[in-house]
Image 1 (cartoon, one colour):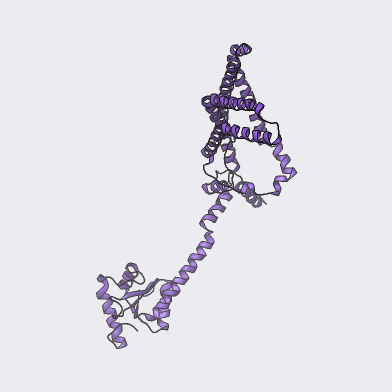
Image 2 (cartoon, one colour):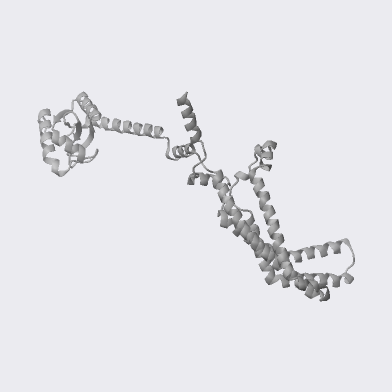
Length: 366
């Protein structure tokens, strides 16, 4: 019973998500669109870009709108009030308004792209767009509503409202004297003052939001890293998947060894001699003067493989010669398919001469 409990405890702890996510897990999450990202950063950068741009071209925008309105008013007496004329005037006004607003829309788009790229780089993920039944599950929906993450988002919203209200109040309070006399100045000056207040307030709020969004990104990164943590078992499984199951790899290597040995054994009948240790090493040599410059090793092995070579040689009436130092030297110095090195020529030549004398012919080969 105690052993069973110990196994259960080990299994439990192996499933605990205590380990940092591996690079592979992070890459897989990224492909699925699961990333650490704050939606506040693009919004804050868009606000900063828009209000900074307005501080430079705000006057031009107001003048352009005034010019468009004046043009419409001046043309009214000349126009006949018909459905066609009204439609034409609306289309012209919409087009002119779009041209006036185009710089602001352009800067908003650019800043929004920059805000996202700074966080996640270039990413195209289709997984979040896939329809999933669990998204419309009422139970899971209720869990999301009453989850800790929802409470955090509510707290963030309350903090933003508080800070934005405070900043707006401070900016307007500093301009209270100018605002008190707004009714006593001309329409143009009043519009300029209101526009200036809007830009100053907007920039102050945008900078504050950027600061809060950076804090939000830090939290989102922490929360993301916590959610993709892995258990020790997960890491083991991933390692097996990426590197291959050790059992399967060992079987593959074993099969490769078998195939290699079979190919080697199939070359033994072509050999002229098998030089043995006599028990631990066996090296099969072949020499054909018409094909080779030097004798070549066609098979070699130690212990079990050596016995297999000798059995095959015996089955095919290949001469076996016991020469302990030569067998060891050939086994350690020459690979299969390679020629005998120069320092072993004499010893190999003596063995081959002995073999040829037994077989009764002067040439090599079978």
